[in-house]
Amino acid sequence: MSEKRTEISDLGEFGLIDRLNEKVVIKNRSSLKGIGDDAAVIDAGDHVKVVSTDLLMEGVHFDLSYAPLPHLGFKAVAVNVSDIAAMNAVPKQITVSIALSNRFSLEAVEALYEGIYAACDHYGVDLVGGDTTASRSGLAISITAIGEAKKEQISYRSGAKENDILCVTGDLGAALVGLQILEREKQVFLANPDMKPDLEKYTIVTGRQLRPDARMDIVHELAEMEIVPTSMMDISDGLASEIFHICKASGVGATIYEDKLPIDKQTFDTAVELNLDPITCVLNGGEDYELLFTIDQKDFAKLEKHPDIHFIGHITKASEGKFLVTKSGTAVQIKAQGWKHF
Ligand code: ADP
Ligand code: MG
Image (tube, rainbow, N blue to C red; front, side, top):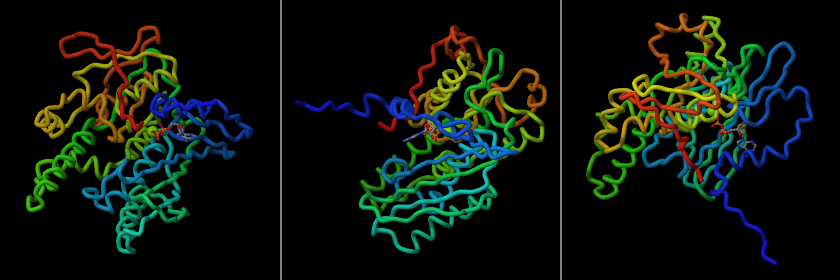
C-alpha cells in the first residue's frame, strides 16, 4: 500500500494555511479574530490586544553576505510591527526567539540585537521575552509582536465595501528592485573578490530591502484625523496579491489605475536598468511594508492633501472582478503573483 503524498508546492503557502485553519475550532470568546488577518485580535475587556508572529530564515528571507546584522535585527522587528500597524493598532511588546549556529559569536549576536533595540526605541515597544536555541542550518529569527487598540479602531481585511477608495502609503517596488541589485553585486563580488560593490547609486532601493520601516506614522495620523480605514493590510507579498486578499475577505472587486501607482524615481530607473518592467515590480514586488487600505468616501477630503498617501482606485462589486486600467485606458485583469515561498 503506497502512502498518499501531497507536495506543499501544489497547495502553495495560502492553500496550506487555509487547510490548517479548517480544523481549528475557536473555544474562547476572547479570541475575536483567529487565522486569516495580519494579526489575531483578542478581547482584553476595555480594549483589544493584537498578536502577530513572523519567522525569518537565513537563506530564505535574508542573505548574511549582504544583510548587515543590525539592519537584519531592525527589519525582523519592523515586519512584525507592520502587521500590527495593518490592524490599525499600536505595538507595545515583542518577544524574540533566535536559533544560532556555531558560526555566530557573541559580537555577532550583539550586532543583531543592536538593530532590535534600535527598532524597539523607534516604535516604542518593549522587548519582554523570547527563546534561544542552537541551529544546524543557519540563523533563524522569530518575533512575536503584541499591540493594543480600541475595539472599534481595528481595521480587518474584510471591511471594504463598494465605492470605498483604495489607498497605499509611500511607494512600491523598491524592495524587490533593491534585492535584485544586492544579488547582482554579490555575483560580481563572487566572480572577482577584488571588485568593490557599486551600491552608492542605489541606496533607496537597497535600504528598503535591508531595513524597511513599518508605517506606524500613518496609523498615528489616521487616529489624529479620526479616520478608521474600512479595511487594511500591509504590503508584504506585493500589491496585486494583497488586493486579492482584501477582495476575497471583503467579498468585493477592485479597479486600480496604472497612472496612480506610486513608484520612486530610483526604483523606476533601476528597474529599467535591470530590464524589469517597473509596473510589474510595483504590482508583484514584495517586502515594501507599506500599507494598503480602503476608506469611506466621506473621509477622502481629510486625506486628499496627504503627501504620502496615494489614491490608486476604488472598490467595486465582486462580480466586476479585479482590474488594472492602464495608461492607455485598457482594463486588464489583475493576477495575484505575489511572492512565492514554495
Ligand atoms: P502576513 O504576511 O501578514 O504575516 P501570513 O500570510 O503569513 O500573514 O499569514 C496569514 C494568516 O495565517 C495569519 O493570520 C497567520 O497568523 C496565519 N498563519 C500563517 N502560518 C500559520 C501556521 N503555520 N499555523 C497557523 N496559522 C498560520
Ligand atoms: Mg501582513
